[in-house]
Length: 275
Image 1 (cartoon, helix red, strand yellow):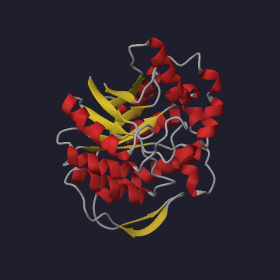
Image 2 (cartoon, rainbow, N blue to C red):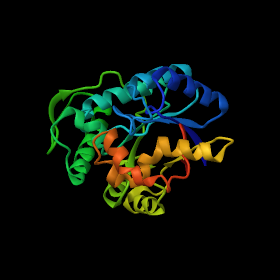
Image 3 (tube, one colour):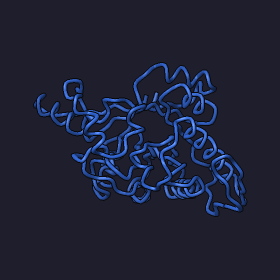
Image 4 (cartoon, helix red, strand yellow):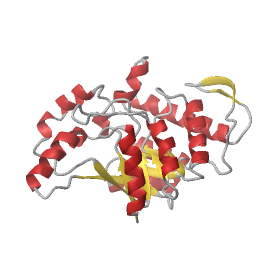
């Protein structure tokens, strides 16, 4: 087991995140992951800098710490061709320390480009095509693509690393587990459910690394820790099937109003666990 550090872009500004990454490496964490949002989940969190700029800076203030997006949606706000270019650049900047974590997205972040929020089955189809496109571009040379959701001519990533970044896929149910088991190098679990790992294994993921996440709220006062947990992480109470559909922090605040008695711990430091 390895213990990683979560850079929570929803709770800290860009300079603080870069400093936290350097301190995490110095403290001995095994790797670091970073979320990729345009909104925080709650107004109380108060931040949402551009993750890819932060990652570039982090790659230059760390030497050994593996880095991963946790996670990026390559289908709406970002086109998969652009994600392929960004991830290849990060692999070069970090000297091979980068993993591209992908997911089917949240309405919270993706609605800002318009066009409506697709049904979850369509989002999975789009993610599958996006992964195909990204891997094809990393193989080198010009790429043209004709799919159900994406179509382009002659795209190319010019600066490619010797070794392409591993691709992780976030899964929250049977359909995403099947997709991840087939196409991902790494499993990313968004909820602590053993069945997710078993479904990933059945779909071809057996033996591949898997990541989970545990929010921690620490304070000498139990009451203060609980209050902070509720303030910062009550948004998670509905689970990802609900969270993926909510549009803005106000919707998360409304959906989580009844969850105060159920939230036990959280904080601006998340522990990611690789099994």
